[in-house]
Length: 141
Image (cartoon, rainbow, N blue to C red; front, side):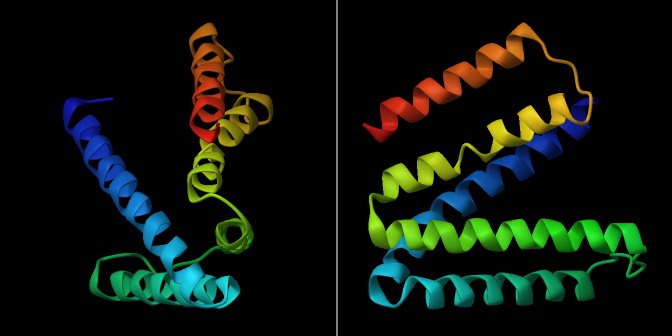
């Protein structure tokens, strides 16, 4: 990975981290103010409109293959399941526990990537996943 690519990855990863951190806190407040299912729907309706608006004003290609469209739809399905589950969790328990466990999605992605997609299983990755699990246990207590 070149330096410019790494800087872009760090920049966009940092924006994602901050935006999702704010989203968790505001989403929790919303789920305490209205039905969490309604809060989830409004949240993703707003996100969907923003995404469509970004496609319209950017130079994004509107070409969609059957495979790409199907995979994007399945990704959206799981995004929706996670979103609804998170908002319901806010209504039932601690924001710290729900958001910390939800943030462990990268462990699921790493395990799938190594087990299904054939990415290398290394000691460093295994130790990183173990540290992440320990971190979640400590934060959730």
